[in-house]
Image (tube, rainbow, N blue to C red; front, side):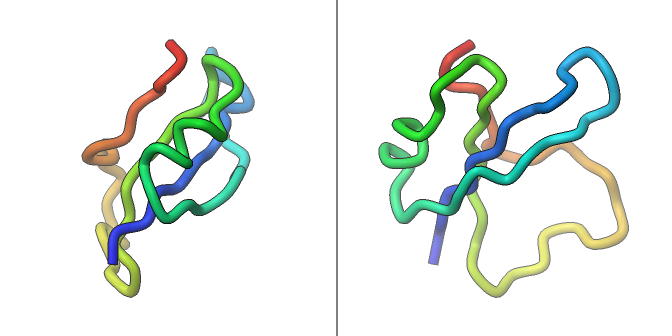
Length: 66
């Protein structure tokens, strides 16, 4: 099952620190939850470990209000 994570970048010009905003059942609902340019949306598959030991870019994540 694909879910959509919404987060907010806390310090955009520093380390990649972000706050968890919510989990949504559709991409449209996730985008609606983004109220500023530092909010991002990214897909996640339920019960799947994506990359536990590597720091890599999040495939499909984007900033809808940038």
